[in-house]
Image 1 (cartoon, rainbow, N blue to C red):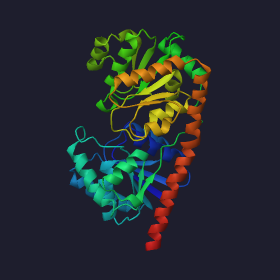
Image 2 (cartoon, helix red, strand yellow):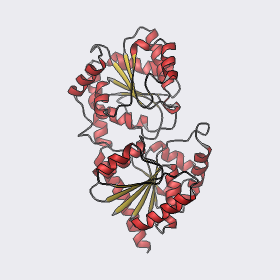
Image 3 (cartoon, one colour):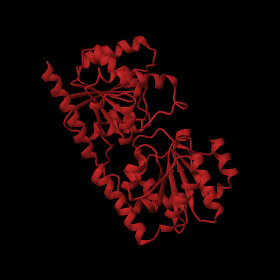
Image 4 (cartoon, rainbow, N blue to C red):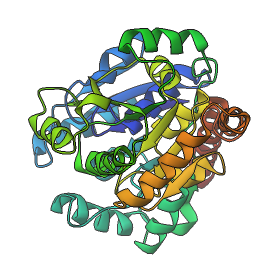
Length: 379
């Protein structure tokens, strides 16, 4: 089948990564991608796979580009239109229907929308999508178990919601002592000091201040640790972040690494990974990537983080640095023990059993085949 993916953009995000992995690993279908916005991180990566990628440089009110999208769908003649993210579900879904395509699948990535922090247009579109869910898509893939319940309450068609978690290539994401040594050498860390790490862009959603406040509490108890912060805008040029670290007297035990795409080395370099987000997560890739590399996690209870971690890590409420600090301390006490070694093995095993790339691909293909057959049956 020819699957046309319509996505809001191709920047550095979870939906974009999942789309890339589908195009890379799925050998059963031909994939074509349309980005409503401009080129991003995954444009060149998709092109290297031999995928046809079109970027419309579109804004929400660009009528001309919307009609161009309809024309492009007509020319491509896909068997399935798979849309990704709120704006693409809306614009891509409507455009596909106008173009005469009925076999449309949406993809919902948010676990929840914070009305105080989200754009008004996004809130309005979601309300419209809840009504359109009964008309436009034949199926709606949802990445988070928690999100499934939330969107049922928002009025989405319950019968169409299909939970498919993200999948990971365990031949790439794995335990590597060599990568750990490289990382320690690069960062120049004392091997005896436990390394705490966070991979997250600087954004209110990721709530780095929650983590910093928790680390300050731990530091006040004379606990020894070193923390590495990785992500976009996590560097010395971020004056707000740097000043916050100085104010909490954490400068000597925190390193800002900036963006780094070598996730294998990063996750093996950490002894403990912490996700301190306060809202908006669906299925946090960093949690699964960390666990796949045998690195246990402390996480706030956002999206499906608790579902992924299971009993291999610690889950605390968002925006609660006291409870976050206690969970991190418990982990620090355990590092280096036999109990910790077993925890590391179990963390990877969960990802292998529940969230492999092959399992995800089979689930997507099952939805697409069902939709295709359903459409043909109704003709």
